[in-house]
Length: 268
Ligand SMILES: NC(=O)c1ccc[n+]([C@@H]2O[C@H](COP(=O)([O-])OP(=O)(O)OC[C@H]3O[C@@H](n4cnc5c(N)ncnc54)[C@H](OP(=O)(O)O)[C@@H]3O)[C@@H](O)[C@H]2O)c1
Image (cartoon, rainbow, N blue to C red; front, side, top):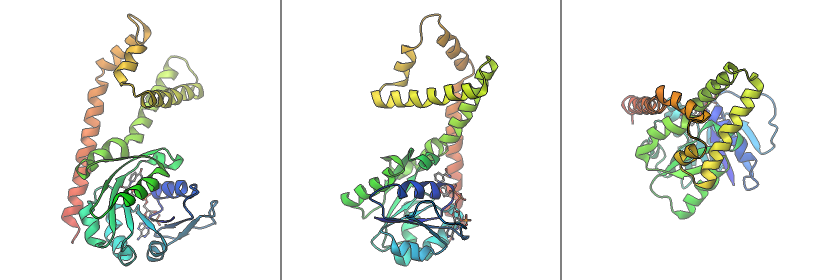
């Protein structure tokens, strides 16, 4: 399979690098506005500024530019997108809007996160009209090259952007806070960092692999009058859950605002 990634920025390049590692992907054509200097370390990756050529040569097209650049880029690749799967990674732009620019394409809207860099993203996606089960399988294959995927109704995309698209930033803040907490109780920074990051990935893996509810795991390690309940008491006093809910709600509202601005300001 040949894949074009139009917009090789932070997320586009992360996705392209992971795609290039797949045995079933023969070429990844990555475009940018400005030319990239120096050869790529992976032979399958080819960089250019020619969107139309990249889209023409690809079987599947991924769009990873900012919303403000979308109209121009979609206009450029329209002629080459006929009958092809086009997967948008762009926040704020609806399937309907993309389909208007690419009337003959099979449009998919998706939201990965930056863990795509190491093939560990979670990507939520919504399929547009005109994709059959074979196309859906192809979409899941492409998304699977940079992590796991889950289908959601398009109406949830702003909320998904706020939860798992922005999620790595929240987790990074949480890790920073826990590393600082380790320092506060006398653990050296590097030791604290290792303890915290492995605790985070280990807990997440345990919950998902065992299909365990978080409350079940919490109860498992919380003994009466023990150390864990002393820590949890302070977390509850500081309203950690409320803060997290407020943060994701605020980010969802921000995503909705950006989507509305795009709808209002971008001519059809
Ligand atoms: N970053 C994330 O974690 C993340 C996660 C999920 C979804 N997204 C979505 O992905 C999109 C890109 O985000 P980003 O953070 O990766 O932004 P970014 O780092 O600014 O990347 C955007 C890329 O698009 C390229 N570009 C702009 N106009 C172009 C054109 N006419 N032809 C070809 N390439 C063009 C830019 O090229 P130059 O470098 O030459 O300017 C740049 O490499 C956004 O819509 C965002 O909502 C991002």
